[in-house]
Image (tube, rainbow, N blue to C red; front, side):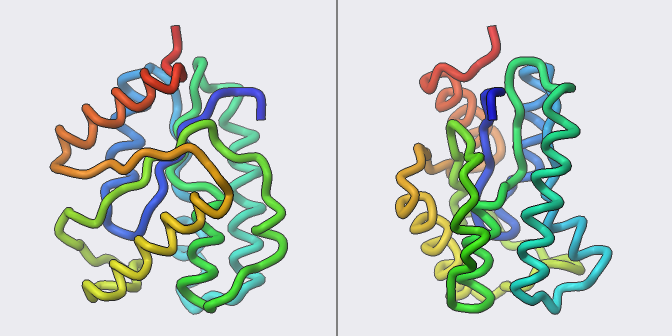
Length: 175
């Protein structure tokens, strides 16, 4: 991927979509919505490993469509690295196709689980212990791949300010 990319990463109901949209507006660029959510809204949440591969492929295709519209920075609401964390959460094992994904972002914003959990038709893990396990799997996936990330916590304004600071410090803010 040639275009700089910031990826929001973390468990369900941690404010990824809200922050992605806000960052894109701030930088006057586009953001790529979470493809896995769209997939689950269309196909349901009884997922198989093949579904996660389809989610990865759908995300990559959608990203390729969005990249030309971005103005110096693409904001992604998750990517296949997050899908790999989902594999561990759902199935307890890795999927080779997800492990092979190499078109990673330049900075990952790992969303903390310090916001109240809000359920909807596709969210699966409302219990605090599940959220903690999922968060650990998300962090482990970033560390396993040695990807640059920063933990984003606090309320909406604190998250936004920390994300802006992280993007600036990483040298990814469009000029």
